[in-house]
Image (tube, rainbow, N blue to C red; front, side, top):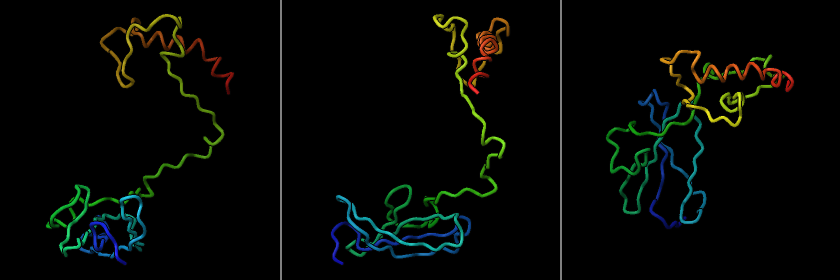
Amino acid sequence: MDQKGFAKEIYLIFSDRYEIERIQKLKMDYYMEVGEYEVYQAIVEASTPRLGYKFMVKLFDGTFKIYDQFGLQEDDEEIYVGHFHFPYANPSDVFEKPKWVEKLVVYEIFPDRFARKDKKEEPRELYPWDYCKWEKRAVKSFLVEILRGLKVRLTILRDLA
């Protein structure tokens, strides 16, 4: 197939990210043109989902370039530096929700907006979510006022359920 563009052939270079001595190379097929871009594809049958990959581009002048996460490279001295990672999650790291939460209703509230004593009153000081000024005495803390307001409004939350 006579193609215009900058690549004569594209190869997918891949292997398990942790077994780099088993690198494989697969010629990709020209698929279509989208605007000014050429799209290539390859079907990979891998023994692991932990793929690392790069692309080797054969130019029309016969030279090669490597395309990795850093862009086009002149050569590939370090064959497995800069490779892309196929997204992978170890099954033991995948969180599965317990059955008992399936019928729960969960509300997320913003306490400093939901439970102020006087809605017209501007808060004296808004804190970042992960920060609390512990050096202030708890009784004088803005956060304690919010907690008091939440306690008063707990019936509103109970009625929503």
